[in-house]
Amino acid sequence: MADIPTLSLLETRVLGTLVEKQRTVPDTYPLSVNALAAGCNQKTSRNPVLEASEAEILEALATLKEARLVGEVSGGRVVRFVHHIEKGLGVPTQASALLTVLMLRGPQTAGELRLNCERLHKFVDISSVEAFLEELAARPDGGLVVELPRLPGSRENRWAHLLSGMPDLEALTTVRSGGGSREVEELRGRVEYLEAEVGELRTLLNQLRAELGG
Image (cartoon, rainbow, N blue to C red; front, side, top):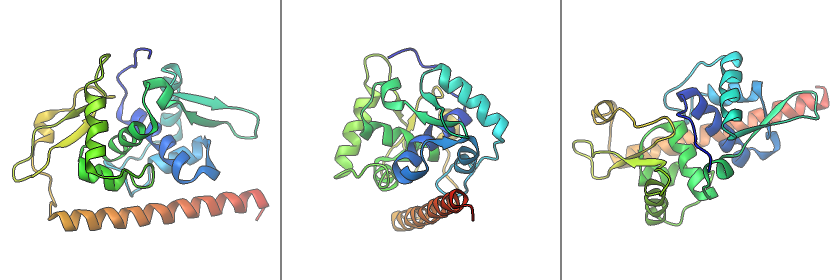
């Protein structure tokens, strides 16, 4: 694996969006810059929510292409982009699913990751999630995730990706506002799951309409 540069928030958002859309709406993949902008800026399943312009996304794509994490597909009327995350980082698809959700949603517990990864990869149980996380953290050529200190009152530790360098531990160890019980968190996750599916179905329908000229 080649040395990977420290990626910005937008660069990880672009990379994560490419992986997510490949697995959840494969008929729209590879993605155009316009589709990438919609995916990067969507209001659901994203933390933080961004307002990136197409010009900013093109800059992020240039960095990712140089790092060999993204490629360009020609041949159509519109230039489209694909990810090479598994080859570029030397990880299996299960691990790339975990990294993708961490890039799109920020630090999470193993339980939250299992729930939020459902549409990318269905993990059998939390233990299998933890096994892949520990493998990613203990890589000989440098960890790709880190286990964070436990939040006050929490029963589980959260994990964060390291593609943007070591996270600000002081900021991440503050109690998250709007916290609630595990049941509330799981319900919120299910609602976001359904909202994302509806949004992606709309994207696919709009693309089909455009292709049919109507």
